[in-house]
Image 1 (cartoon, one colour):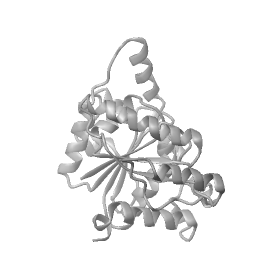
Image 2 (cartoon, helix red, strand yellow):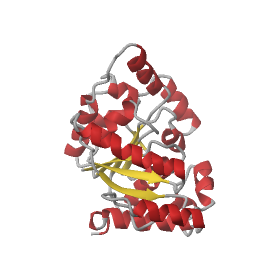
Image 3 (cartoon, helix red, strand yellow):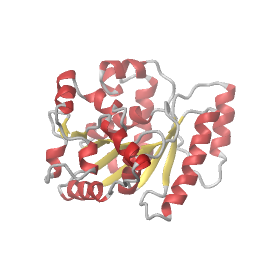
Amino acid sequence: MRTIAIMNLKGGVGKTVTALNLADVLRRAGKSVVLVDCDGQANLTEFYLQEAALDALEDGGITVTDLLMGGAEPLWSDNVIPLDSDGLVSLLPADSSLYALDIAAIKLGKSVSIKPFEDFRDAAAEDGVDYMIFDCPPGFSAGSVAALNAAEGVVVTTKVDGFSLRGVAKLRAQLRSMRSAACNADAIDGVLITQWRKDNAVLTGEQVLRSARGLKVFDTVIRWSSPVDGSTMAQQPLDEYSPRSNAAQDYRAWVKEYLGEEVTG
């Protein structure tokens, strides 16, 4: 099983959109995927679940918080919500209770064990799951640290602007420091440029990013495309909502570049 964390320290750079569209392209290739929402904002969870399911989650459903606190079900598959009729994609949801873990860590000095995440990952792998994708929040939190430890590699999504590019640089530095703390995901698989448009400032920033020493930047960029917002409102991946849109085509091309024969072979 391949495990991937989608991250940037900056928000609004397409992490969740990338995670869900990556999962959808993999599903269409016949791959099984477990999505893990590690963000207390729960945007990934809200994308997939209808109001009734969200209400049920608030009334005692299993979330990432339960897993981190050791309160999840013993069988890994009892903690996830199936998302498609083929049984290929499932979700470990999140809710705002994740923020309580961070507050407890700050106020009370309570740390969260990463072992439940590792056990969850290993059990899914033993059952033949092909991919596990972690949608991380901006910044380092209990959820993102656990995800980075459980993931083999990191995909950094970024817009080409000053704030986002500085977020990439800071993330590289943080991952290097986490390496000394026995974090698995100390390598960035690649930087994915999102919301790209043909603009002098964007082109200049892209050139700066691609010239950074030791940093892989994917050749494929995700072009700005108005159907992206529409797809999130409709709660549909781009290949379902607008398969001919620039962004849908770009995500398909990026997955092929990133995973290659794993998907097409």
